[in-house]
Amino acid sequence: MNFSAQNRPLLFQKATAQKADLLVIGGGITGAGIALDAAMKGLSVVLIEKNDFASGTSSRSTKLIHGGVRYLKQFEFKLVKDVGSERAVVYKNALHIVRPERMLLPIIKNGSLGQNSSSLGLWIYDFLAGVKKNERREMLNKEKTLTYEPLLNHDKLTGGGVYFEYRTDDARLVIELLKTAHQEGAISLNYCEATTFVYDTNGKIKAVEVLDKINNKTFILETEYVVNATGPGVDVIRKKDNSLYGKRLQLTKGIHLVFSKEKMPLKQAAYFDVFDGRMMFAIPRGEITYVGTTDTIYNQEIDKPLVSKEDVNYTIKAINEMFPTLNITPSDIQSSWAGLRPLIHEEGKGPSELSRKDEIMVSESGLISIAGGKLTGYRLMAEKIVTLVVAGLKKQINRSISTKQKALSGSFESETALLDFIKTNTAKSDLPIEKWATRYGTNTTQIIDKANSTSNDALAAEIDYCIENEMALKLTDFVVRRSGMLYFELPTLLNKLDFIATHFQLRLNWSMDEKNAQLAQVQQLIKEATTFE
Ligand code: FAD
Figure 1 (cartoon, rainbow, N blue to C red):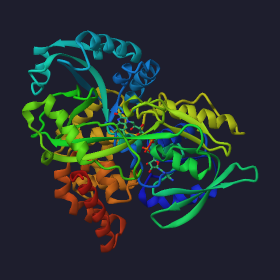
Figure 2 (cartoon, rainbow, N blue to C red; figure 1 turned 120 degrees about the vertical axis):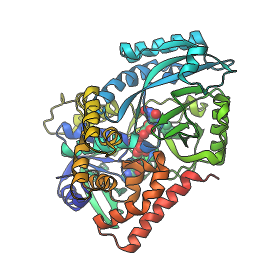
Figure 3 (cartoon, rainbow, N blue to C red; figure 1 turned 90 degrees about the horizontal axis):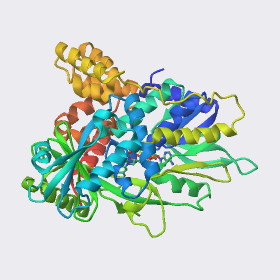
């Protein structure tokens, strides 16, 4: 059975007909990773997500699979070692959406980095993270640094270093994980919100009441174990379970601004010093360059973090100091996003000092909550959680099965296979093969087939694929999280929005009112990504 919007009713039937071993609340990277690990070990798993998959923090990050060079400054060596070496695993298993990205570290007068300390720091990083020989750090003098990126501030620059990061599309990583988990038997339902816990006479959770937000109906899912992987929502769920004691979350907000390539024509990704001692990434990607992030304490509405005027001014000031000839102003912003880090509160620490380590909390009712962590470490977090669940289950489980070697849906076997695929198929058609291959991987062949047959239109073929294989139910699912158009191709999206809406209407039998309501949701998101208060 495909992971298709049309199969949603069947997935509901399956989910409610059984008592699951594990119910995962939250369809971000953490929940998706857990669903895959558990399904591979033979557990019956249901995952529920109250909005679309990856609609929380996992579509709003800096989109790097990284070892966290910056955590060296905080002496978090274990974290750097764990996530650093895990980079290679995530890359190998999802090669189409985890792409190597050379990162330039400019060294400036009176900056937080010196030539010697950066050299030593990057050497430690290479060592801890087990970095491949051809991706190890190289230190540069000022002239060489400027050949990598001529737009850097010539007056302030004293030298630089280069090292490797991996760039991903966070939302697509979640979707590929869920597609793979689906192939392994996990049932994942978007637009399903956990509303109430149901307890047995010993006070242990035995079921969860769920609201299906598409049909506005509630239903009960019975389960042995519940994992709360709701990211910034972890404490909201713990409160529902009356188990909000001990460690608590401290949310911090981070934003990114998107500029057209014409306005910000960077040759090279950079991780640069900001005037207040923090650091920021500027990452060219296709037709745009995005810059971020900020790190500020956040105590407002969890579901809708927005980019504020203050965030914009701070980020633009940082850009103009490092790339002074660009003269960026707020009117140059093409798009943006804001996300919340679900970190663990530590008394007396500022936002950037809070540890990014993950924490597991188990309540008396059996609710297992997981918070903190990084995209990069999702697989290791999942292993820890599933080990905990398996220890309590009474059935025979093959514990040795691991996700370490598990290629995700769409992954190519090697760089060569990816490049060959792009070359061969580009020669045969004028379809956007490279874009698709680094978005859908090997599954691109299915989109090519569709484009060459029934629909005969590239965009329609891509939409069809996402409806039929990626559970895209709404326009926003496609334009934000399946294709990333709202962030990375806003001018094209504005041009094609009517076409996309009409195609969805046709495929999902929407009434005119429904189509207009869906369009209004996209317009609202565009407004939020382009206007700032
Ligand atoms: P989320 O992605 O938020 O998922 C939780 C989900 O639970 C949400 O989709 C939510 O809708 C759902 N939910 C909530 N309540 C309910 C309910 N009642 N019922 C059902 N579902 C519910 N990490 C990196 O490795 N690299 C980076 O470059 C990086 N950059 C970052 C930049 C920023 C600005 C931020 C904020 C974070 C960054 N991170 C990065 C960290 C990383 O993005 C997060 O650690 C990760 O995405 C958290 O994923 P999650 O699944 O735990 O939470």
